Length: 186
Image (cartoon, rainbow, N blue to C red; front, side):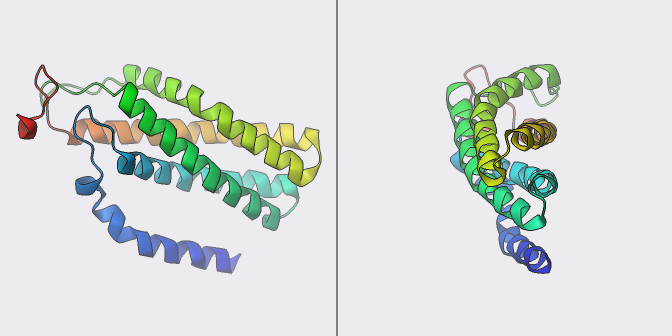
């Protein structure tokens, strides 16, 4: 457990300079998808969901070792699925751009958009989680019970992460004109 904690701290220290530059490098222009921006959103989501997975899956497998293995598997698999899903949504159904600097963030519209993103993301990840938990434990009851618990807790993490990023993107982006161009693009 101490080695895992040390590894996490070292990883955060190594990635920290990249996070500090994320505002400049990974911020997509209004109406344009960015794979790097989607990857940053996936990384913050996975930070929260890995903690919840570790707790729930450790209990389900009967030990921290099993929880670490399954959490690590889910970390890798769902990071790729999340990044791809988010990038596809930003490419084919981009979020609205604000038309003036004083335009307020529409949380209701954002919840609906995030629900669509969730419904295209979660079935794939939930299937992976339930299947891997069943393969590890050999018990359909444990897979169903603890898999559902992990899925439900990660739903909260998903919405909090996406709403926070969308709010940040909204208030840090410049206003766009009727053609969707920012002042820098005009």
